[in-house]
Length: 70
Image 1 (cartoon, helix red, strand yellow):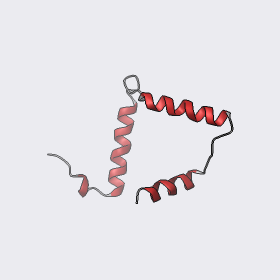
Image 2 (image 1 turned 180 degrees about the horizontal axis):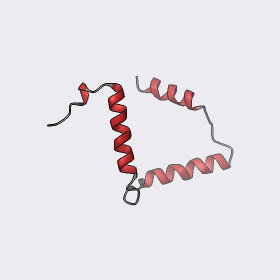
Image 3 (image 1 turned 90 degrees about the horizontal axis):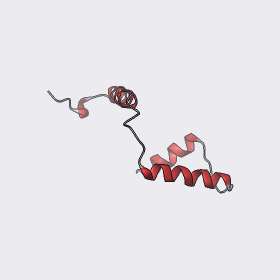
Image 4 (image 1 turned 30 degrees about the vertical axis):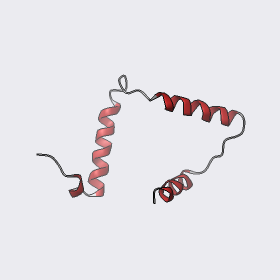
């Protein structure tokens, strides 16, 4: 029997996501970041070293992301 995600509460969905992530993260040897992620980190480090990086608080970042999704 397959669970229907639509029938889960928000809290149940979050608990399920946490359980999935915990399970996936235990096998970190086979879990590797994609190449673009390594490149993005290098670019961010370079921008920071050259004082060209702009930082915002996590609250501001979440608001920006939420607003862009609408």
